[in-house]
Image (cartoon, rainbow, N blue to C red; front, side, top):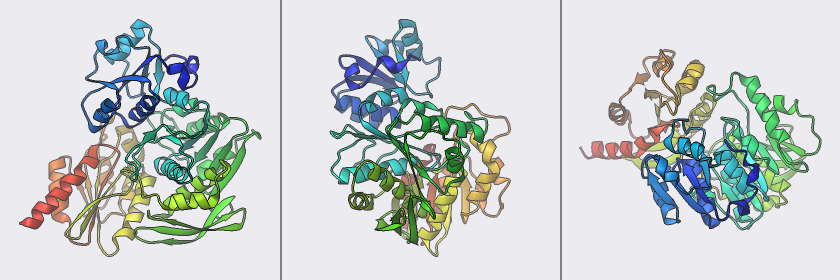
Amino acid sequence: MTEFEEFNGIDSLRGKRIHFIGIGGAGMSGIARIMLSHGLQVSGSDVKESSVTENLRTMGAQIFVGHRAENIANVDLIVLSTAIAPENPERIAGEKAGTPLIARANALAILMSGKRSVAVAGTHGKTTTTSMLTVALQSAGCDPSFSIGGMINSSGTNAYAGSGDIFVAEADESDGSFLAYKPFGAIITNIELDHVDHFQDLDAIYALFVEFINSIQAGGFLVACGGDAGVQEVLSRITRTDIQIVTYGVGECDWSIDRILLSPTSSVARVAHHGKIMGELELVVPGEHNLLNALAALGAGHLLGIQSAQMTKGIGSFTGTRRRFEFKGEVHGIRVVDDYGHHPTEIRVTLETARNYVGEGRVIVLFQPHRYSRTQAFAQEFADALSLADELFLLEVYPASELPIPGVSSLLISQKMNPAHVHYQPSMVEAIESVTKEAKSGDLIITLGAGDVSSLAPVIISSLDSLADK
């Protein structure tokens, strides 16, 4: 990889052609979209056409289907994610030609340079918290730039070049690349063991987050969840005194919530700042976890100089992000929701929310584990969390970029659960048939996981329609 310090700010990219290997990915496409909005020359390749690549093409990007060495002819800078293998022909050609190659995170850092940037990090809740902060700042008239790992429901986009001086970015810790951002401010929602393909143990993750906090600009801020054990451990290791550190949570924190009221489709809590009652936080999305995400956004907005009343109003208008307990449809009383949860803690929170959402009905889950390494490391934890479902249908592991690990499959999870309520279904076709036959009016079906299981939700709705017509 090239040392990206030679590129400093958006103006350093003018007059250059920037090429993205894997431009259709969520993070890559967002960065490309912002560059195109700034009038930069952008090209990119992906293995197949999609609505994302088509949208980028209409914005002016040159899109190639398939990865070939000739795609990088006359390119000045190549952006690639860590998912791009060393043997990728465009990567090899770029290295041979001496074309600068930088990681996705470095490209985003260039765009964030010169802005009051806020990086939102944590094992869970990053996308939602980043989206809440973005929507609230938009509502307050700040017109922030943003780059998020998921689509905001209200705007239907995950990235935007705003006219304001604030840049909000989701910061992915999975490979440590978020150290490139060097933000003005940061949020840390929680810290747990994950990405076991990259981190040996929890202490390695703690060390990384200490580095992340130390990368915050002097005079900046950190908003951290005071009720999370992992965050508390990391904060205990911080010695710098040139940033403002603010905590949030339930209980004794700088920003706190109490009088929590959860309904199937909304959530309400009273907010206090340093013990002073600030009013109520009313959300149209369910779950205590979302109240905490909103509180983090509220704290960050306050440190950015935005009035709390404006932030609260904006957060209250937030309707969710794609794949985060996203309602997909209802057929004859059977509701279908899609969710990205792929870590045991996320799954537990999702299913607790689902239990409140469905009332007297059953929670039927179609789960696809993500990565062999995660399945191997957390098989028992997955089993415990998924036991909250009334009926569970297990798809085979979605490998992402991993090679299979001998002996590791979804059976590792099912073998640790009550066999009466778990069904191993490696065939997606058979899984859809089984789920739709199982569901009855009043039930909730959840497609759950970070792989391609999300594509099954509309098929399930169609299948339920077909069964209802018979």
